[in-house]
Length: 356
Image (cartoon, rainbow, N blue to C red; front, side):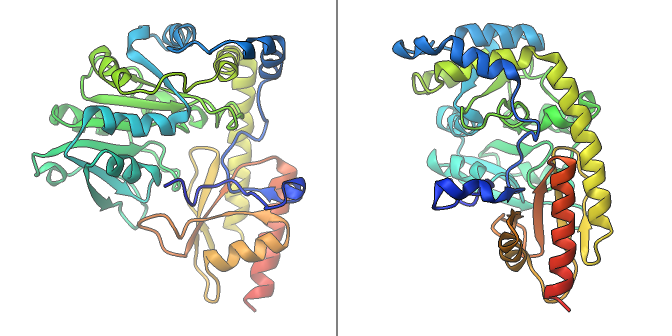
């Protein structure tokens, strides 16, 4: 559990800034300035317990996305909510499509559910609906990332809705942690439908796009009856006061949101195009704030590449520990133009030197 995620850490914390970290997919613009202000101005609230139900934040989120507050559950990052869903709803059997977020099978296992894993199309890692996934009537839950992590590929909203409506006895947990980075969001997100369908849970992270993963906060949207069942199994006080303040001021900062989306769009195109020019690397077209890359060159794999890059002060995400992937894949986050340029130069240099 909780092993093999992105985010580079050295044993010596004083030197961790020596590494340029492309392994964690966090907004390179950081957090909105209002986050710092909100935390400092309300620091005296540390003397009190946080709002146990996140009631103020739930009302704010509901108003922001056009739902009612009783359709919202706030958690200590999206991962808490992934574990909460099977614990509360108790599926006998759960489906996962690999490669995907590594905590999905762990969440199902912790609730005692049987875990069934299907491989995504190995040509392009796209998701295709097939009725045989649901032949076993004990299947009670399905986890799916959109856009997927680590591949960054998207599934059309209509495809997902069709599947969800055809299987009303299965709870579909859709991870939209990176949806805020996506262009033409309405083609893909199910957040508008989440309150009306009784077998749909949409989970969002508030720390990746808004740049404060150390605070841990996320939320889900679902039918009010489902939300009520989830809350019965949720631990109290998991979301601290400062995370609640940070979430609210961040979602209100329209200027930061617009600037981040434009910045990420420009830089992911640049990063993809430059990676495409390096012999032996095949990047997949990115939809979010990271690029998934296949290695197509003898004498090199993702484990070796990670070590070679670390010697040059750069951390990449070796994807060999994702179920359904080999040591031919890695992932890099989108960062600033200067940093992206350093990554490209280092990759080009290391591949030429180490494989000649």
